[in-house]
Each structure stands twice: as structure tokens, then as C-alpha cells.
Image (tube, rainbow, N blue to C red; front, side, top):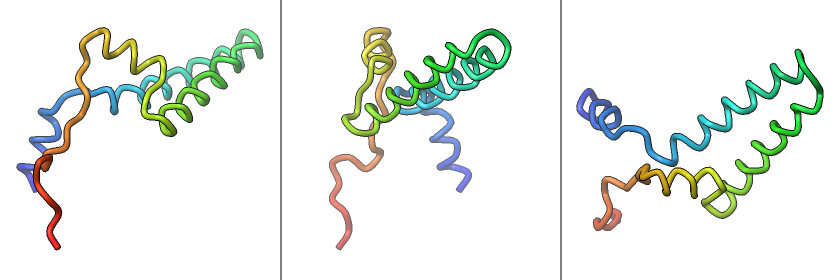
Length: 86
């Protein structure tokens, strides 16, 4: 068990981890801004939610394109190339 947690930690931040984290930060920030500044900041929450739905449906969103351009890697399956046991 300890070895697998070490492997997961050493894998670093991938696009698949950054996109939901970025959306979570956007939702929190826009909610706080909507409470303190203007209700129009809820549009940012709507945008983050729409991007998460797009990401889950097709596997990419504008954030993934920007992250790829910045050189952030995508997660790879540790068992790629192996077949599932029968």
C-alpha cells in the first residue's frame, strides 16, 4: 500500500488533476466575489460548470488546450499495454 501511494504522489500534477482543481478554485472565487462585489460574478461559476460538463463529455475544454500548450502532461495508465485478466 505504501508503494502505490508513493507512486501516485511522484506522478505530479497532470491535466486530469488540474482541470477540476482549477474549476473548484474558480467556483469558490466567483462565489465570494458574487457575495461581496456583484451578482454578475456568478457568470464565472456558470462558465466553470459548463467547462466541466464539456470536459466530462468530450475529454477536453479550453483549460486543457492551454495546459497542453504550457507543456503539462496527461496521465497515463500504469497498466497500458497489458490485457485485463479473464
